[in-house]
Length: 113
Image 1 (cartoon, rainbow, N blue to C red):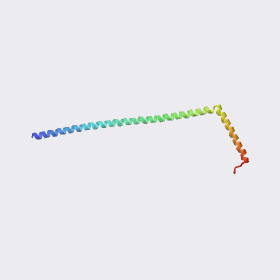
Image 2: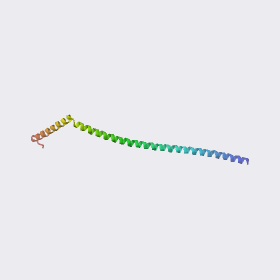
Image 3: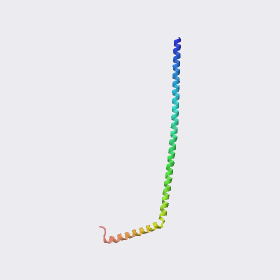
Image 4: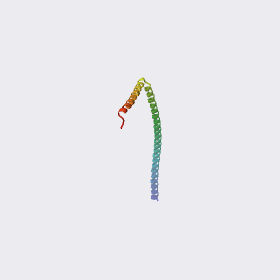
């Protein structure tokens, strides 16, 4: 009887030890799961922030491109209003007219085949 009681107490002690180990493993798994979920949540938030930053950067780029196009148009307009530009344009127009006239005269002497 003493042997059975001793065997039962050893079995109970072994069972108790296994229960503690199982409980410890369950706690470890729960802690790992919680850490994973926090990490996943942080990554999702980080990805959302990066996407928002990308959208903002694209909008800024478009705005700057529009400003650049406007500045180029204004600069071209100012350049066209300069005397040097107007004089050069007038000279080119006269030269083009002269070339047309010379081609007409040349056509009289050397007609196309």
